[in-house]
Image (cartoon, rainbow, N blue to C red; front, side):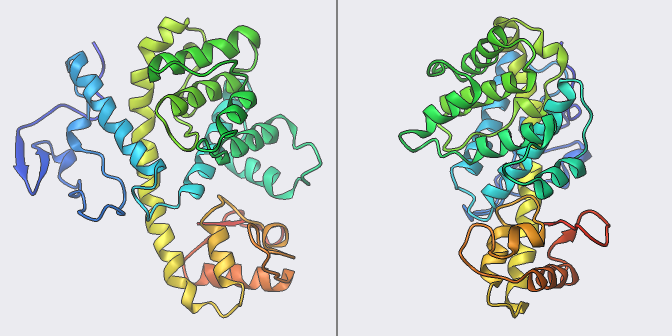
Length: 325
C-alpha cells in the first residue's frame, strides 16, 4: 500500500469553485485565480492519501502533470520560465552529483558556473551543471531541437508515445550503454518524458528525486515507480514556480527606481538566470543583450537591487560576489 504524502482526507466541502478538505493542512490553499497568467495552482484533491486506489493515483498524476504543462507552455505568463528551468537545472545537477558518489552544494555549483571561464574545465560537478543548463534551454519546438536533446543525452530514437514508458525506456537505453552515467540516464528519462508530453522545453522532474535504488530497476520497474517519483517531484516544482512569481514581481517593482540606462537589460538578465556575477555576467555587456555596462556600474546596480529587496547576495563574501532573485 502506498504511503500517504500529504496526510489523510477529511470531509470535502465545495466552496468558491475549489475543493477544501476538512484537514487543516488544506485550510491555507488559495483559490485558483481567474487570471490565466497567475501562478500555477495544484488542486488539494490531488494529494494522494493512504489507501487511495490506483485510478485515483493516476488521476492525481494527470492533474499534477497538467499543472507543469501550464507552466512550461506559458499559460502562466507571470512565471519567469527561463529562471525556473535554470534553477531546476541546478537542483538536477546537485542530485546527479550525489547519485554518482560526490557531494556538492548549490553554492559550490554557482561558484563554478560564475567564475570558471567558458573554455576551461569546471570539473565533473561543474560539467554536469553546464550539461543541465544547456539541456533546459533547447527549444523542442524547433526542427532540430528534439534531435539536439536526444543527442545530448544519448537517446537513439524518438521516445514512445506513452510518457511513462518513454521515461523508463530513456533511462534504460542510457544505462545499458553507460552503466556509470547515472545522472545522464535520468536526464534521458526526463528528456523522453518531455518529448512524449509535447513540452516545448525539457523539464527536470525524475532527476530531482530519484535514488540509487531506482537506477537499479529494470525498465518495467521504472515504469511502476515513475508515478510515485513524479508525484514527489512536481509539487516542489509548482512551489518553486509560485515563489519565483513573487520574486519576479519584486524586481519588476524595483525597475522604475533604478537610474542606470541598462536597467531593463539587467532586470531581464535576473529573470533568466539563477545567479549573476556582476563582473562576469553584467560587464562589459549585460548577459543576453548588447547593453554595455561598466564593472563599477554593474556592482552598483546589484547593490541597489539588494537595498530594494529585489535580489539577494548569495555568498556573504566581500569579493567575488554572486546575486540572484
